[in-house]
Length: 308
Image (cartoon, rainbow, N blue to C red):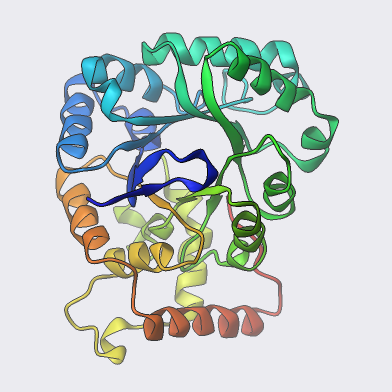
């Protein structure tokens, strides 16, 4: 898989990254996680994205990588409490420092390539204590580049901060708000962009087929997808499935460097690899999906902001 620089970081990254939330949230065992991670690396994926709040994900990755750690651009996130809920204490310099050290221990590494603040709001960014904690970790060699994971106004603001080199934000066919706001700010600042949820959580699938851990989380995506009412076959794309169209839609957005697709199944990971290698979706199809989103938003009578 072709590598490109991740914005101003210069880190060489694959266009497809492995989102490792599912490794933690679906109860995947160590052997299965190791096999999945090695398969991804063997097939050219070098971006592995995890977080302190993804249950057992960091531990599974740390146990799996070993000497292959050097082949990866390892991304994690800090600022969430142990139980997975944010609290005011989560954004103090002390708690973030502890979170980073805990992540390094779990990942069995002396540094992460990118550490992101995990979805704090704009006032937290403006106060500066959280970013100061990341700068301190960076100066200590624990973190190479720092950034922010989130959406909307906070992500747009983060792009304008000198310390921020990477943004992880939601970009998908059912969640297009950040295309209009965050991506232009990221391009202007030469910030690296990791697109999260590029597969829109499989919004086209029946909810009963979704893992129970994700079912309610997926519902608003599925509702938007139904409202959009798009059918690939009507556009002549009879050989393309929605997972491919969605992934390539995200990769077609100017400023996106990596699409982070999570998977617990080898066949899905292989399909994502094949789709990414076909490159961005043709402009005509991108334009149609952008139009379908705008029309559905208008019919709904409300502004479709970024989804969680």
